[in-house]
Length: 344
Image (cartoon, rainbow, N blue to C red):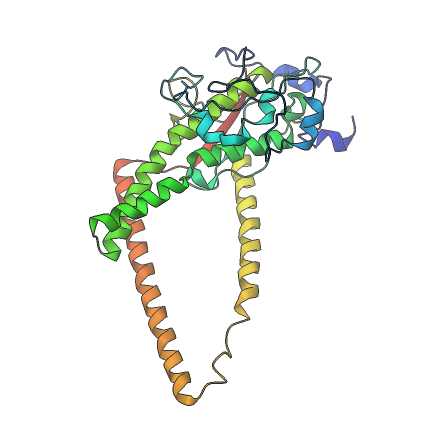
């Protein structure tokens, strides 16, 4: 095998490497291949896919022999999560008219080795799950990468990460609600900020459960048939899968995942700083054409704006500080989130 192939986690490999044979899957059961379409979805008439649905290009050719993903049913209520919890995520609302990921409709190839591998992990971009995870495969010293031997493509993994982030993020309706309620209550500007923040925090706490349901469905329809399981957790709290404490990654794996997260964050920050720096050079000199009085009035207006912005930032910092103190007192949400990928 060439070095290029061994370093590419998405290179599809059908022969089992010798090193992976030393690892055994944890005795936690397995995911059977799903027997039907995802819950809340019905079979489509001819003419599918609907307009606006763009499956990944390479997957169109791979799955052309199989039935496409059906549209969500509009009359069914929430389906139970594959882990057995009732009242789970509504797939029809979550995916909308585009339907479920095309990855779910691609059967696991029978000629792949699906070799055992050491658990891998990916650390979230922050302590807010809505910030998502680095759009990179979890680091692993095994060659080839387990994704290459388990039929997980780059598009599959990025779509999964995007769905987890979407499940944890506030929807447009939630944001409107969090801003309208303080207005209806007649609160002051500062009081409204506090109330909006508190409402959004409660909403995000509920969305953590929705993100766990997203992981469960991906495990059931995609990762499970490929003999992998992804566990979403924060600290020892398990947000997906069966009840009980979350499995912990090896300290070495966590160090590798944290290094990856920091490199990804630094790269994003450098890019955004460069973009914002380019825009700063367009200011200044705007008042040179004004008379002396106009220039003085403009300076006063800018000074007042800066003072108001400073006061607003001070109030926001105070609100965040109070929130951190309250969370620390309750022992909540002190760690970033983790996606642990293990063999089954």
